[in-house]
Amino acid sequence: MTQGERRIPARRTVLGAAGATVLGASALAAGTGAAQAAESRSAGAAHGHGRGYRSLPVPTVIAHRGASGYRPEHTLGSYQLALDLGAHVIEQDLVPTKDGHLVCRHENDITGTTDVADHPEFASRKTTKSVDGTSYTGWFTEDFTLAELKTLRAKERIPGTRQENTLYDGRWTVPTFEEVLRWAEDEGRRRGREIWLHVETKHPTYFRSLGLGLEERLARLLRRYGRHRANSPVFLQSFEPSSIQRLAKLVDSPGVVLLSGATSRPWDFVQAGDPRTVADLVTPKGLRWIASYAKGIGPTLDLVIPKDASGRLGDPTTLVRDAHAEGLILHPYTHRNENAFLPADFRRGTDPAAYGDSFGALKRYLETGIDGIFSDNPDTALLGAADLTGRD
Image (cartoon, rainbow, N blue to C red; front, side):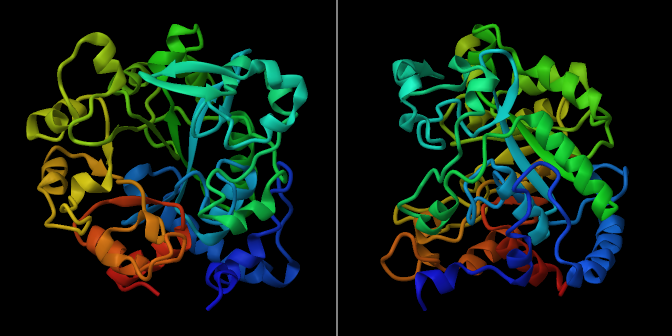
């Protein structure tokens, strides 16, 4: 099997590939209309129509930065494809521009995700910054106005692993979060159901120190588009608990605290002198504290099933049980198909960019009882979820 053959998604993927070239993508070919209408009716019932996050299918498949296994991440093309593949929720990461607009990028460093290096007019803006204690050299969203940022084009972040995604380099601009909200409204009307979003505030303490606080800007947009209520089709997530606490005072949308490695400390804890680590937060006491202001956690998969020294999966921890005991849902991250990202016991062959036994790894993770999973390959995750629940 060639690499190209391996990457070809299912029929629905191909049908959706042309969508979202501009905001408010046109409907798919007329020949698929009847099938889509039937799908929309059944999906609308499953997705709850305003009944809140507990109405989502379990396990919930969250498209990580869109369908980023197939398209450059955080583009309207990536989001549209994820939706066409059937993902239950689409993720956005938010960073601000110099003039205070929220845009969708995984990081404020846009060196690897845009063609900024090819723009001589911005050469002088290359700089070195410390973000959350780590030094980066490149170009940063907070040094660009939205108008300037819109002159750039998005590109694949890891071309060595996802060479086929480079076909779409330059096809889309960097979307604003407001553009995504309008896109979600348009798609919701077209499909007859809510379009769920999973929205992360990136480096909120860092940006607040620059006078570019994220939470207030995000809350204003959520209110403008009616996504500020407890049953709104949106999750709000952050690696900084204080960001979720701040958002909880501004809107009623459900919050999710993201958790990285056990020995790490959230950056807001570092800045505030709070000695707690993630290991403290995943204890029953820590989870009870999170449950006082949030509805869920987004742990790294290693907190659900640790790996041994060889990189193979070990036995599950008690995190799922303990979080559920506090009424918290779990949306761990991140499932990907490539060998480079899979546990060692599910890799196949020696090519890190080749697909391994993704379904085998998914089975192990989903069997722990997690409520959902972030995936770069939502079609794969949906099939894995169907294997678990017996759905076709």
